[in-house]
Image (cartoon, rainbow over all chains, first blue to last red; front, side):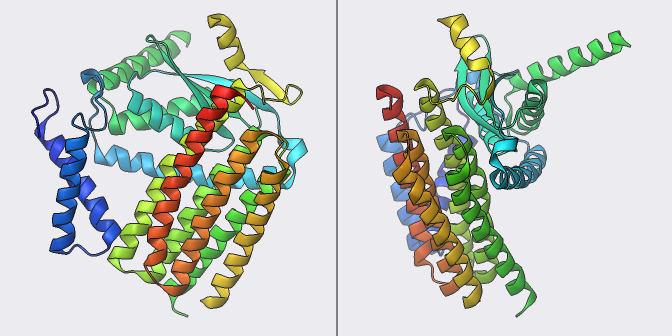
Length: 194
Length: 113
Length: 86
């Protein structure tokens, strides 16, 4: 593989391992033939797409914390179950529970990976669905369609909670710093009010 | 039936019920966006439960791996699909005005345009 | 196990029939795209139930392919709607 500045070796190796694992999973058993054919296929893929699946700007390069990621997964799973329950109730009595709205949810992070993860998670949570993203170079804003709006601020708060989990699990150092700074500012704000 | 069998059967039944729920939702709900809510959430969870049930009942590593792959694919593609269709539908004016309580995207569009 | 699979399949089929109604009724192209996407997801669910019932691995590969292609189709039509408007 051609040398690519800025992308550490272990990430490239991990990429290859994940792709070969998917290939082997599709074939079933991890026999030597499957693994070797997987390596060949992955080599062809990387030859065809030398840049890999697209480069993130260096400051967006994320870090992975497994424990935080596990917490994110658990929160996400719970939210998905609640979401489905919510849809069930709405479906059974459509007219009374529908008050549609589109709420703007500004994110603190700038990384597109975080935006994607939070956007996807919001779609799979009760009553909300991301339908647009606005990244105008200054802020990233998600536009979320809400099925039954009671409080726009609550939607934003839920989005921020997801973002918190995501940043702590996958965020780049720049985003983590931004997150920590924003949290500190909010705490100071609350202290000041008391 | 052994305990894992019972659990697997339960999961498959609940999953199939959620699939049915998605179908009902798509017919009953009043507009495109609401229908997307119904098409993505119960269908994704339903598929996940069915796959989990099949994985428990089957318990061979190769099959479990494939099922895990399917669930992961669905989790990533379903919301993105809804996002793309939702965005397209919004810009086509499919949002019904009487039902809509608040529209911050329109305000943002107005600010920009 | 077979009884469970039969009940599950019946539910999925009913869901698919309802979705087909939406596919025909519309009214907009977006509605039909959502219906198609759901139909494919239901197909994947049905294949999953069959995999559960027969314990055969073939259905699983079908599920993966349907999941990927379904998403691809939805994405393409979504782009089309955005460009053309329907």
